[in-house]
Amino acid sequence: MASVLRLYAKEDRRIGVRRGGETVDFPFLFLVLLLLTVGLAMLYSASYAQSMYDTGYESSTRYLLKQGICAVLGLAVMYVFSRLPARLWMKLAWPVYGISILLLLLVLVAGQSVNGAKRWISIAGIQFQPSELAKFAMILLFARLTRKFGGKAKDFRHGVLGFGLALLGILIPLALEKHLSAILLIGMVGVCMMFVAGTSQKWLLAGAAAAAVFVLIYITFMGYAGDRVTAWLHPEKDPGDTGYQILQSLYAIGSGGLFGLGLGKSRQKYLYLPFQYNDYIFAIVCEELGLVGAVSIMLLFSVLLLRGYWIALRASDRFSTVLAAGLVTLIGVQTALNLCVVTNLLPSTGIALPFFSYGGTALAVNLGEMGIVLSVSRQRNQTKLQEGIL
Image (cartoon, rainbow, N blue to C red):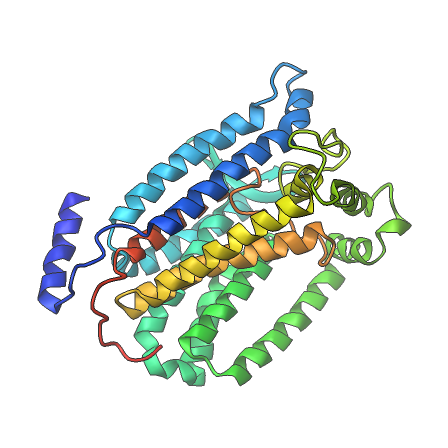
């Protein structure tokens, strides 16, 4: 890594970049660490009963220990990435994109099923979801294409076909996996980045209409997805099956009241609410910490996003600006979708809450992505390179 840093230091001197932001943005770093700490505390509380049940009442920390190990690894990756020049990722955009597609296709051939979904693969004994890498790969490639296209992004050829074909390269394997949640998430973040790149709004609206048609067709032919929509609209009609999880989530949220039942005192986590430590962990947050605690956590996420965009706007080049903005947008969209699902504003999609939900791959990737944003923050006092207006 030291040789890479020296190489980029020489390049900076050659192109006249002024070093002034050698340290990372500490407010952003503090917010990431605070959300991670609160997330681990809530994960332990939410997974306590499930861990006892799954281990024959021998351990209450089964899920916390696994998540803690991934958190340590993620923090190490975050530190390393925060030290690497952000522009290094521009050269890795296409290789990472290609690897992510290969891994997504590998899932179709040798994937492992977990909870009825075939979205995991195991390499060297390590199980992970390639879709997590695919999200990062899409953002990385879009940032590179934005810098390459420049003002041409307003044209149909570049702003629609260029970005659209790159997006389809990831969405098609995900559709074959029936991974609707990842499709929605990547599609929404992709549209946001196309807007930042300068794609004409008329094409974005046309794309949104086409996406809506796709979702309707997808739901029509994929029975399980249609059941989720039915359960979302009328959960009370089947409280013992399709509507059970939604109703239990709403019970948890409603019983929390203003200040909650107290940390660790949730009732729904005792095997009443399925996936209480994963997709629906925010329902346990509401039950134990109440409206005040839930709003406080939402404010933490909001401040993290605002600080992330602040960092992106002060980056020294177009690529770093779009890359940081895309990574922050990913956290924001994922958080918003999760909260909407938990409160039944949207049908269940299987999207986790960043830094809170159980899932080692997602946590490690999220922390690594935040490390890249911290790397971009080192440029915040540098002279802006003349690459045109975003």
